[in-house]
Length: 205
Image (cartoon, rainbow, N blue to C red; front, side, top):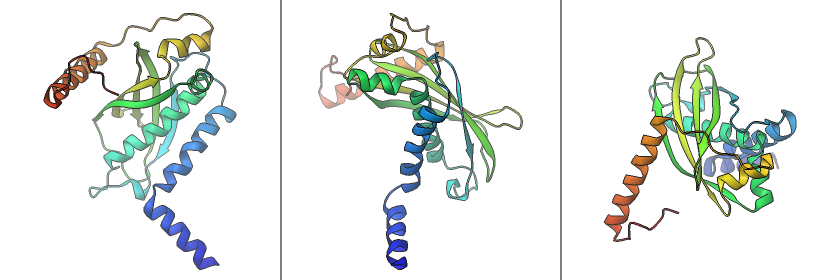
């Protein structure tokens, strides 16, 4: 029986990213039930992290893919805590990561602690835009920076925010660098549509 359980555990972790699949619902539950609700959707939230041996690349730095995984966990916790997940459920909508951009400024090393600071920058008719910073607690240095575009299906960002506040709320003006990034994404989409023979009015899913 023990061998069967060990074999099942090995298969689970070998074939699936089981640690991520365990941590994600725990992160959402922790944010929803054990932490106070964020009343302001623009309020920043901090998510703690630690570089483990399984996170390392061949240079003994945290693997680039692990930054995206930790950002995903911090982002889901943030959306749960500020009520956007609840609003999605109430309005029958869903979220999908449509674009992300990462800058790496200083590597994180084995057993180094870090914090992922997540904040909502604003929204447009189709998507939310978030910034996530990986900070070193020892000196406050921003080791990595991510921008994320979360596409809303079945509803709209404005309706979700209106549901939370029970009134119409306008998005803050997006930072200049985010506007440049949005323009880049749109230019890239138009190029790919042209290469695929699609019309310029065809939208990305």
